[in-house]
Length: 268
Figure (cartoon, helix red, strand yellow):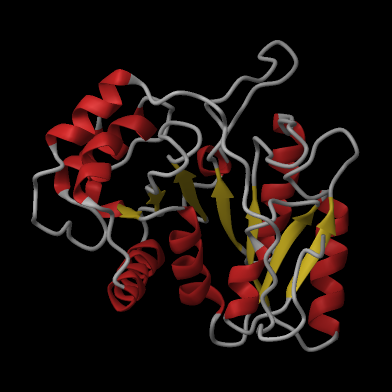
């Protein structure tokens, strides 16, 4: 079967839809969603206060103290990543991603007309680029007239099912921030099963909180895959506040709100 049809499509190509996880919906989640099903009010863009407070508690329990003013929620991580990419890289900047990477990362940069440059990862851990390969890629892109500004990475990686060791993550984060890159850390799968005795899972935001935006998709790991909801944590800096405001502008233009019943389940 052909994955894409060359006719009638723009530059963004999509593969087959992801399979379901095969897990039943937890009864408590079903009850929360059903109780909110009669609500007719629209959720505010960026998330209602209850959901933002819940997201702050989620990150604070994981070593990242967070306040609601630095959080935004959206109907899935793709919407948030599109908004962050548009805010950071829509004016001529380039995007860097690991090779391999989650299949849904690159299309959002291409949708905005921005080139995506892939950086090799070490054989033992995907999701985080090799720091020396990253520096070489940045040098090459700049030599060709580009302006790399955004690096998307994932400590708990999707396609390779590996967790990057802290020493590799530290070297890569230091190399990226030294080159002036803003990092988006996709932490959707950080709460799924890994081998805790083989490595320690750290967030790049724990290392450089001023240069890292964290995106967590709740659908698939904490919610059923068909209930789209995601949250983003922005740096507590002036550029971080500007990025947060710009992302809210873009989500407003897209009408990207979480459905009220799903927001209730996500907060729960």
